[in-house]
Image (cartoon, rainbow, N blue to C red; front, side):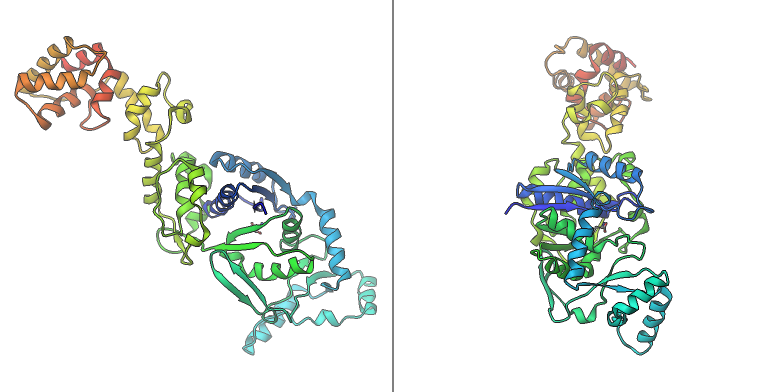
Length: 442
Ligand code: GLU
């Protein structure tokens, strides 16, 4: 059986790292098994779903390189939900209710005050057809609940959490459809998972209790239950679920200079005991993706770790991936020379300025000035097509008796205006003969 996974965001807001992690897990699993990764837009809630969010979701996934094999929209599938719903009515697995929110709240309070679990008492199940007719005549429309099968314990083997067991008697029959005919999340999701042949549902552990209900919905609709796995949630550096983390969208990461490959590398491993490598090989991550590596403890999303991975990723990015973000004229040789020194791609502009000049001449004493003039004289005689830095420093070591820092630092300072930076061997040919001579004759 081929693997089919799906990412099912509700377009009621922007994607944050938690959503993206879920999308990534589903993409990795499908990729690992040569299966399909679907994007399902859960837009049954017409009032809260916005087209701008749908557009942003697609753009964020594209930026991350998580390209779906197909896209579906729940708002286009109401006919399919209606047909499945009628089957559930015929099978007696959904029933009509009329309680107001106020009534339900009151009943909950009473149960809780008696120390009882606040489970819906199924009062509406006792209504007769005459009762329903009377309600209808009074202009009252029902909402619908799914009738849990109390006699069948709910179990599944979770890909991350292991054996799961729920007692349906301890659960309320969930409302699946509102009085205005609109759908709640729970049932359309199951109908879609069946229709789309979804084999694996990977999502956050905030959905575990939904899964308990949905397992019975699959069965009620005559379908096999897919494999489920629920990842522990992400926490912020401060060790608790952070508002800041929830507010971080892909736009913020992009603006902060975070590369999509860095987010992918980090989020693919966060929550496992495996090291986070600064890889740009998403297929390699997919090949190694293994749900059994995930633990049940919350996974800590750490900005410092993201920065470390981001730098490592940048040090591997090929020229073609960044060419359109580099300063005009900066070629592959220059990129490869400065890449190891970048924490953000945007910093390439600073090093391009160092290469092209002008650079600030350092303050230097008479002795250093003499040394630099000596360097300029040697540099003028070199073959600049070969390795001018190697030749220059070898000749100067001999001629001046200097070595180590005393040899290299004044040269670097004069040639770049900085104390540190990319390997001079790579940088000096980029600065070029004439510019280098001018900088040494300070
Ligand atoms: N739209 C649901 C959500 O965003 C989907 C949950 C699921 O994966 O089934 O929470």
